[in-house]
Length: 328
Ligand code: SAM
Ligand code: DTB
Ligand code: SF4
Image (cartoon, rainbow, N blue to C red; front, side, top):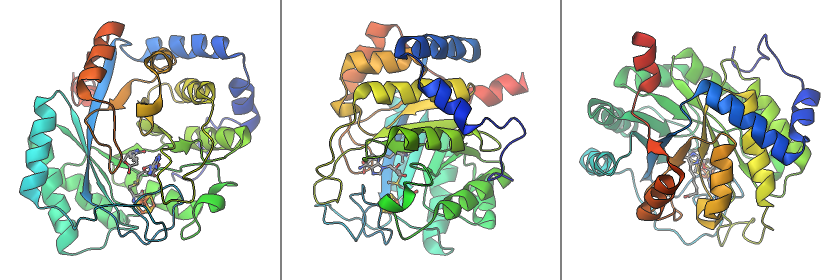
C-alpha cells in the first residue's frame, strides 16, 4: 500500500534533524549520497507539453489553469495526437529523453479524450523516449491502461504538507492524492511526486512534505521540486519569494532521504541564478525541464541551459537508463 508508512519509515523528527543541519554540511552530505547512487556528471533533460490547457475545476491557488482564478490564459482543448508527437520529436532532436504531457483535468474520465492520450503515450514510447503524464486523479484501471500503452512515469504531487494543504486547495484532499499515487504504484508505473516551495508554507511544512515523500512505499522514482511561479490573477500572485537557500536545503534533504530518485528542478528556474542552480546540482538535483515553456509559464532558454551544463561539466543522461541497467 502506497499511503502506508514503509518498513524503513523515517520519523518526522529525524527529517527535521537533517533539515536543520548547517547548510554546507547538509550539501556536502547530499553530494556524497548523490555520487554513491548516480553518475554525478549526468543531467536528465525532460520536456513538458500542455496537451489540454485551462478550464480546470480544482481550486489550486497557485495555478494559472483553475477556473477559480483569473489568470490571463489561452485555453486549449485536448491537442491532436499528430501535433503532440511532432513536438515530442522536436524535443528528442533537441536532446530531451523524457517527454511529459500535462492536462488541466482534475481527474481522468474514460472515453475518447483518454483514448487519445493513450495513443500519444504509445507514440512517444515508440520513439524511444520515456513517456510521462500528469492528468490529475486516476483509477487503478486507467493506470493499468496507461502502463499498457507504454507510460514510464506518472506525475502526481503531494505539493505541500498535509497540514498546509487546505490553505492551498479545498476541492480535493491529501487522501485523494495518496489514492492516485497508490493506483500508479499498483500498475507498476514509476511515480513522479514532489511539491511546490514558496507558497507561504513554514519550514515545518517543508519538513512535513519531505517526510511524506520519503515514506511513500515505494519511494518516488522522481521528485520534482517546484519553486512557486507567482502567476498574476491567482491568489498567490503577491507571495513573497522564498529564500533560495531554503530551496537548496530542501533539495539536499530530498537527495539524502530518497537516494535513488531523480531530483528534478521544475517550475521557477527562470528566477533562480546560475550559481544557485549549480549549488542545487551539487546538493543532488539531477534533472531539469528544458524548452522555452513549462506548461503555461516560461522556462530558461535552451541555449542558456546548455551553456550552464557545459560550464559545469554535466552531460545529458540517456533514456531508460535504470531499466537498461537492470536488464544487463
Ligand atoms: N492537473 C494535474 C495535477 O494537478 O496533478 C496536472 C498538472 S499540474 C499543473 C502539475 C503540477 O505543477 C502541480 O502539482 C504543481 O506542483 C505544479 N505547478 C502548477 N502551477 C505552478 C506554479 N504556478 N508554480 C509552481 N508549480 C506549479
Ligand atoms: C511538476 O511538478 N512541475 C511541472 C510538472 N510537474 C508537470 C509543471 C510545472 C508547471 C508550472 C506552472 C505552469 O507552467 O503552468
Ligand atoms: Fe487543475 Fe492541476 Fe492546476 Fe490544480 S494544479 S487547478 S488540478 S491543472
